[in-house]
Picture: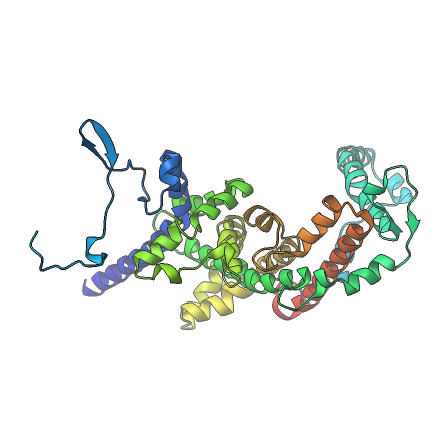
Length: 88
Length: 330
């Protein structure tokens, strides 16, 4: 009984290892298909935008006085004269 | 190779044809009728152009001189030019197209054999769940049109927005250290090899068919002898599928010397970066169709044909040392 259990466990481990390895390879191997699908769903603006997410997305906008403006991330901490201790 | 050629079935002579029974004679006539179209096509579209290019290689024929102009007889001039052509042989900073092809081949050939072999071994494993699905999915990229696949990989390997570089940056590689792939002298061949790996589905299937043809008694015998996985592969699987590997090696070598489409699409056939993608076949194509120098283009084509022929003959002569044909005595 015990020997049978060990044998089944060993077979299961082998199957998990081989199938897992194949699956990992497959994910890398088929990634270009996902790239193709995602690219087909992107706007031309997103395709040429640097740092845009890899999935199809709209750029974040903010309505200010009825005008829709793009939101930019400004790395304040990297700016000259920045002091984290300054009061806001 | 001559022995193998001698074993091929031969066409009967007229005398033996008359000795055949009426039924066999009719079967042969039908067979001849069916292959005659192919033979006609081969003769008109392959054999005659080949002979024409051999003829052209001894002339000075340029389309730019006009179709009605009489070409001069050049003798071996084009062949002498080929032997001294820096665009073929240069070993400097801008390598000649022959060395570019050879250097790329030395990298791409082992990868093009080992990767499908590993995939075939995985797909043949009794431990793999969903074998049919995996086989189909690994084969799938092969059916994508070649040029579309090249453009797709161009996007994947884009230094700024490509997924490969974004993955590398995600895992901590600095932006200034990520490879420029097709625009970098050191990375352009690995980039081309990556694109090539995507099309190994066919080679994988051929090797898988070879692996499935290995008699299971041999594996049982190896198991009884206490062989481990590697010993079983090296002493049973590999010798048994060596004819299939040999077939793939020969096809790959011929294919590598005809390597052309990827550099033409990815680097627009310019040879950049630094002439490292100016493959021999690209030079041949440009000589024919851009410079319209039919004679020198024909000379380049004949040199390529003879070189590939010599390499193939050498490969066949090595076969007796490592290719195992079951049931055949040597």
